[in-house]
Length: 596
Image 1: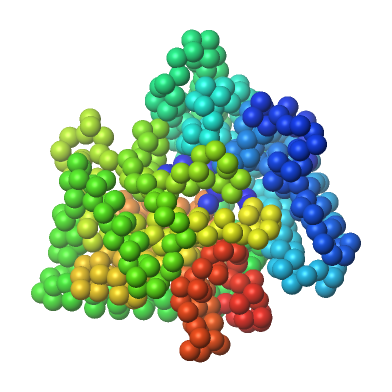
Image 2: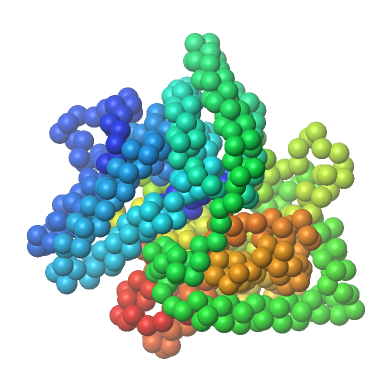
């Protein structure tokens, strides 16, 4: 349920406060008698004992408070009652959120899970860990105190721009309302941030410069159809105020924070272990995790070398990589090529009985909207779990900018080679995130709609990249296997770097070298991947989740024997939302056995 780090989401997207709740906008005005029916966060009628009813009330109360504290995430999730709020990050508001979360933890502990149904016990364990994780983030990770980027408002604006859930005039009014609150938010940052890591401070200044550019160019492009002069004037005034405050914040970061920034981004073994437990429900010795990850890296490297020989036994890896980069569609044919590729993958998923796609509605391939093109390569834009109006899902692919010279266009298009685009499309659309989105609509409870883990969501995306190739997709073309393995190696290196940087003293130079040696990355790309470990310490979730899902599949197949059905297995796990695999084991196998 916790929103993604703003820096990550803007790069990759396209997963009871101290202030009074806002007045509901017009779209939320409802007859009082029907308000509970229309409110997706209201406790649903519960049959059963008092413990079941009490737990439903605790979940509902916590969700309301959480979305009020994170109004931008509420917008992304499809709850639009908070669209005019930017969120309060004053120390008083943070202290109130800590107190509210502690009360929720205490309320949950007063419920005896043994008196809950089997399904509710799953929800109870997920809810308890996630709420404890939110408290852990607030009180021990403390990004509000050590990362100036915590106060970047661009994600809140992006959430209003990215989807047409309301007329553009209404969404621009919400954008304007949020921009008016930017000076207050940034002043909270100045009061709260103390001695950040130097990298955090330096990147924050760059992030906020990007936010100004976002307001100057991309937001107006998204609302180009708005002609109301009064509304446009109001936006320009709010934007000007926000930009002035942002420039002052950048100046403060560079002049006051950067010269004296000596904080450490390293979590250390104990905090890292706790974060994995709260976020992913993974509780095992870190040395064991490192051994598991090293085994996976060794396996992938051996398969990568073998695939290279099948592509061209006489070429070096560098020569193959160069051939791969040069083999790409043209800018004009990229979207039609990707559209045809999705149809091919979708058809294979069903005819090969890998998974059924539970909708005839296609995931639409489109150029990444201009307001997000600078911050995205390829992405899935799907509605949140409560979105009622904007139901379309888009597979966004960023086309070259028309102002670029031919050399830059070529460099950009090399990222969409015919060798790698299949695995990117598998991950983002079929049978990856889009199919997960389709099945997750069936999630059986409020908890499973609003809470989940990255190791399942991103683990599923990585799992299907390799699993579909293993299932026979493009088996006649070893280039597709080679391209898939290249990206799998990057994720396996993230696993090693994330753990080693935060628990074993690995330096950034050593992390960069690891990506260059084992994922065969150029230095610039290796630096970007290594630096991400600082502010996204658990980006091990891709490989972690893929390994867990693979083991769960094999364990269920052994338990069910000849009755095992792969497509049914995939549908069952996706229909639970994004449950940690530890909980999926209890549903599918009735045990609490190891997930790795």
